Each structure stands twice: as structure tokens, then as C-alpha cells.
Image (cartoon, rainbow, N blue to C red; front, side):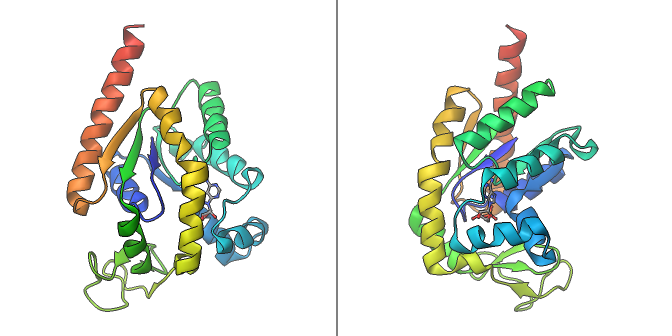
Length: 224
Ligand code: AMP
């Protein structure tokens, strides 16, 4: 399952809840890359300059990393991909790898959010430095300022949520990632959900959309 949408659409929030509800693994390439940067691994050192500029990290660094994870034992029952694929080339690599495993993308959830709302969300976005739970200054504030409700960790802002980097990330999204909407629509797996509704309502809509898309795809396959 793939979550698509611009930065700030709520992919991370929704993908985490949906993965938990369905009992499958949540794979967020942005989180994996940020962790690599924090740990100073070779991957992290190479990825950092692209991330700081709000650009896509080259496929040579990202694609194998995702392929490794989805072919691992914890993804045997499936995975929710959040932040991957982000280009047609990545989507083709994913399709190729999954079809070699006798599998495929069952559903793609597109979270639709207006640009004005995205900018508002990103500028007020915070996350826990320990468990990575997302917060928002207005719509989802922590109970105690600066402290994570779940684990007590300190909240921080992402470096790439600065206004000029946000603009760059949105441009990259519209140029390189948005064409995936048509790619998956043609395959009949795209489900569109209004991402501006309250978080729990979006979750319900996402689960309904996944149910009907997967049902339709499976019925289609069954009917030949
Ligand atoms: P995210 O947390 O999904 O907003 O990702 C943060 C940053 O990580 C992006 O702006 C990119 O620089 C990088 N990144 C995450 N996923 C990918 C991907 N699939 N391909 C290339 N770069 C990525």
C-alpha cells in the first residue's frame, strides 16, 4: 500500500495509524533517511545535502534501501509505504520488485490538501525527537508545551520545514511526484481522500477507500 501526497498532507500520521490497524509494517523513507543522518552513516552523509535543500535523494541511495525492507521477513504480510515512490522511476522499480515477488501495489491513497493549508501545517509542525510522533501548534498541540504526550521526549522542528525549503519541496513534489497520480489512476488502484478533514475522520475515510480499492482490484483479478 502506498501513501501519496504533498509534504504536510498527513501521510506520516495516517500511514502510522493505518499500518497499526492492519497489523502491517510502516516504512517511511524520510524517517529512515533522517535516522541515517542522525547516526552519521554513509547513507546519511550522502543524503543530507539533498534533504537540506528540499530535493529528492538520488534513486541509487533510496531504491535498494526500500527493496531490502520490503523483501524482509517483517514485511511478509505487507507494508504501508510512506514517502516512496516519489517519482515514476521509483514506481517502476517498485512494481518490478513486487512482481518478481509475485505481489503488487494493492492500493494507493492520495491525501488531497490545498497548498495554503500545506504551508500553514508545515510551518507549525513539530515532532518528538525520540519516538517521532508528529504534533502541530494549532490542530494537534502537545498537552505540555515542547514535550511529547506519548514518551516525554523533547519536541523539535524539522530543518527542512523552513519556509524557503518548504517552497522547494512543494515544487519538487508537483514536478516529480504528482505525475504518479496518473500512473496509479491508470492502474486502477488510486483512491483519493480529502486530507483537510479532522485526523480521525481522514483515517476512517482512508480505511474505507483502501477496503473498496483492494476489493475492486481483487475482484478484477479473480474475474480474469
Ligand atoms: P519526508 O519525511 O517524506 O518529507 O522526506 C524528507 C526528505 O527525505 C525529502 O525531502 C527527500 O529529500 C528525502 N526523501 C524521502 N523519501 C524519498 C524518496 N522516496 N526519494 C528521494 N528522496 C526521498
